Image 1 (cartoon, protein in one colour):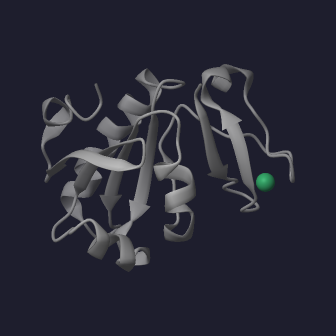
Image 2 (cartoon, helix red, strand yellow; image 1 turned 135 degrees about the vertical axis):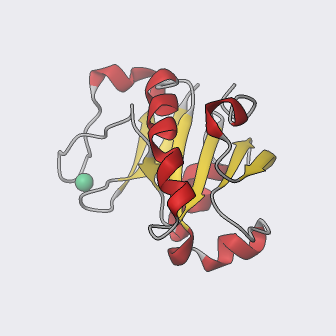
Length: 140
Ligand SMILES: [Zn+2]
């Protein structure tokens, strides 16, 4: 099973999506716009538990901020991983400026902060512009 509950990036409606069928381009049940699942998905703090903690696949979360240079350096690597792991893993991006409670919950003191979640728990994390090699374990 590879079900994940994702908020539509266009209308905000939560949709339950089978990631293993990503190539069939699932659409939002409300507005009909497609979910683009071979790229990182932005997750708002209010949906974090539903999307990340309840996902049936491992989730690599990039906690970033728009003003953070090292975060921007890492962004293309996250894009690559999302493409390679499409259907098997979710790559999520959380804007830390909009997620103060998650920052506290996971003890995020500096960004970029990358974390792998499995079955609702953070199992691994790494901090900084670590390059592709530095994300190897998290994206395995
Ligand atoms: Zn929608």
